[in-house]
Image (cartoon, rainbow, N blue to C red; front, side, top):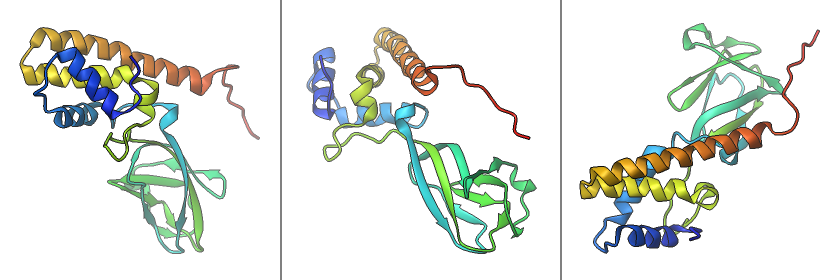
Length: 195
């Protein structure tokens, strides 16, 4: 059974549960709330350039930001630091901190700069207007078992909850394995020492 969109997911849930009275929108939303912000996969990586005005020591993160991969100014990587280590004095910066949904730079740049951010984005929720996403297209079993766990909780069926949780664990393991293979396939990563 292919699950290419939210309607096919709804149909599959109805087939598995043999029920027509399910609060499907709620079950899907609950499943998404549990895994959408924790799943990390190379297909969720995004890149954006963010303009930072001179003398500004902070800028907002993208709304779908989950976890940072790389933050650079003028192709120079910045290092994540404690908020207490930042001083916000004018000058060049090589460190940053994340405070809530904002990036705080170590120093206020003397001129306008462009910050290059590579990050993992949250899994976008399914809707009728946006009926699919990379997770459903690539790993439909994660959605299927995640929603079936929510169904089992709703139906107060502990045996099915345990069964579907086990199946979801396997599916999430497959996501993690695919991420590792796809991100680091080929030759072994080596670090270089620069003089």
